[in-house]
Length: 174
Image (cartoon, rainbow, N blue to C red; front, side, top):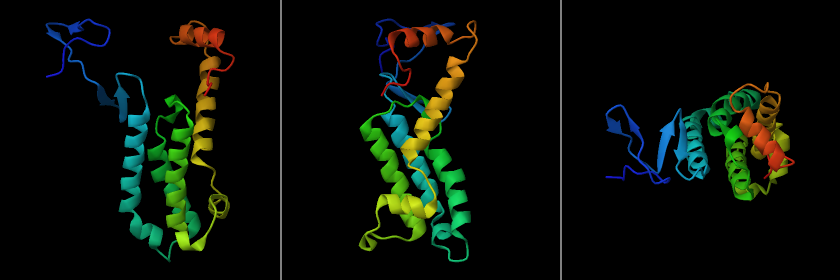
């Protein structure tokens, strides 16, 4: 059984019982780690999105559905599942590459492109009119930062915003 003492060295008690200390748990579909790392959450998100993508294999291989319908389904079902809560993810080269590899693999499957076809990633994006997944996530992070920056001074979370702005020239430094 995990220790009841958390990483700060003290137990947390509510009513008549202590709260169990765990390394990670799922809250509202996101994996929360005790060390604050988001890679477990990202891996879980991509696995969930990949499972949905596999379930729709007949859709992607269908010759009766247009590419536009397939891409609309992909964006609404797969991409939204993959980048849910991505506004809080850190941005590293490894994470960006992981997102783009997932995205490119799916787009190539939808287009029916194999490795033998020697089609570049940029060409696959061009054919589908899609953007890199890391760019979509970066845009979402910036939009969230804009909302936080425009919060009135008395709102919860503003103390963090002001401290972050004082310590850094960019609240989204990567």
